Image (tube, rainbow, N blue to C red):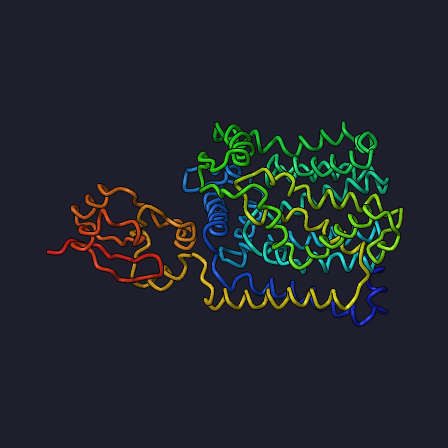
Length: 490
């Protein structure tokens, strides 16, 4: 594989070399930017703090939402890799994000390997270029989230299934398919397996290959491998914190997606969106390559309706590739099919299908200057956004600035947040910032003449404003909150 790439690049065109330069630039830009801006609330800071707690407490079985509060919302794989990074290199934004970037690059390698097997070096290069220059991908792989790991699991499952189905090292790839499903179970849970099943059922039924697809897999040894990898943690997690399986399986995987505005979420708020919004998210997050897929689908519909050869053009595939095209379409859109009926969704839920989209574009296109231009657009947007984030021109929510600017004047052991303690406050205070959500507790601390600091959201302090004015002084004012130093005024 490496020799083929070297020989191709040695005699490649200027266009290909420009594509490689953009790919390397995107990767290096993302790598260098990992520590340039803080972990943002709520997602990044939440998962970063959960990993920091795992590293601090050395509890590698049960992720924790707070000290001695189990986090049942997700399996631990993404927490494991972040906590392992903290263990090896120390706690920081850079090392919180680094393992997720590495996982993203493993997906790139998987896509290259797959495209090389089903096509050639030129198509393989184009596929990784498309994937890396997809706006949603290049940003998400540098963030502390589950999605980079889910993308790898889904991509491994779908690539290994196809290679197994086509008889290319079927014994290895058949078992790799089940191992990838197990990885998905440790990254996201049953939803990862459901997405794979949706894709395979859509493709196999539409192509009348359902029975052949089933027969191609090593079910006995594959299932044994799957459960061997999955069961130990799930059983151990339930034994450690009884109730985990009920909440995670029923709540997170049924009620979250079928109950609009689901109120059973223990760890956040539901993201209630109109049904079908996921398709709009895909167009935006898959930018700029979503245009090519939409164009391809439109031409296929026109060609089918007209029954004419004049529409075959550059997007037409040979008969030998027609089957894989339908496979890639099912692989691309299976996550969207699943989340079409979900109300509680986030834009990044479209990401699992990005690898298939990249391969599909590569197989239906020849490398040209327009691809370089499109990739350059993503590079420029990425560069500008990173500059905005790192210089503070764009300021998503985080408590890092407040804690850094007051580091010399406050004692973190005496720091409280009124009613809502952001995850970034927990992360950047090393878990010392405490939550205060009781008027009675506030009054008691003041009556006991206890000195402390209180960060309060200006929208939620009407009930204690008089008390604060009498006993506390404002020492720092931020965009959405104020820092009070509280004491008894004699």
